[in-house]
Image 1 (tube, one colour):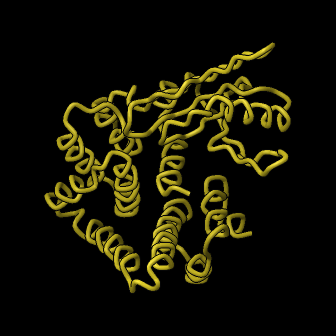
Image 2: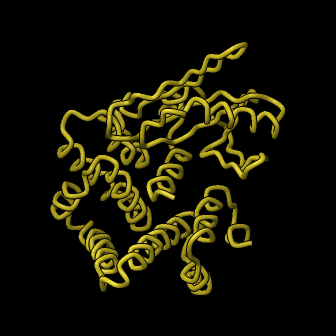
Length: 282
């Protein structure tokens, strides 16, 4: 699982209605679980519903996938099996390369289309001007005329948040900035905002620790990379838990710390829908 997936899905669920409507064309009133019945276990990225009962399926994509339209058709059929109706579908492209994916399939007695939206269709300046910190953070992926100036203003917005939200927003910004290779600019600009120094130092130390694991001894290099990746995922999950449910109890920290591989990924995905710690860890 890409780390940006966890952060971006969480942010999108909290975006103001106008921004999400601009991306998808719909106002999502509630979110559904994302695991669908199929021959193979299939999980969509986001599945919501409008007040009039229209299902909205949003799939996040950071690379140009030549078979994206076919994949979306498969998702549409699986969703229909689950809910008895077809969804409106949007592929939200967040990658750095130019968008090249096609959203249509044609064949004998078959025609299928889905919308593919580039997140750079959004005006980054308008998002930075918003009072909603989720809008501010997502702006790093939107259309920007001056990336450094935009990062500086986003950091200033984050610095105005309360301590708990400030740390979470900074972590989300750092993760999403990786999709635009803006981490160096964030580190440079964050040093100019004293209130963010401790948060930034923790993030930098976390990356250095992962680098150390990856470098390691030559004999254990591959194992070190895997451990470093999982350690990063654990940190993100714990911060997301704290943001949603408050201070993380020590037993929960130990339990998350002991997870690895698929179990860690399942907790990360369940975190998007869980309504309590008990439900998350069940």
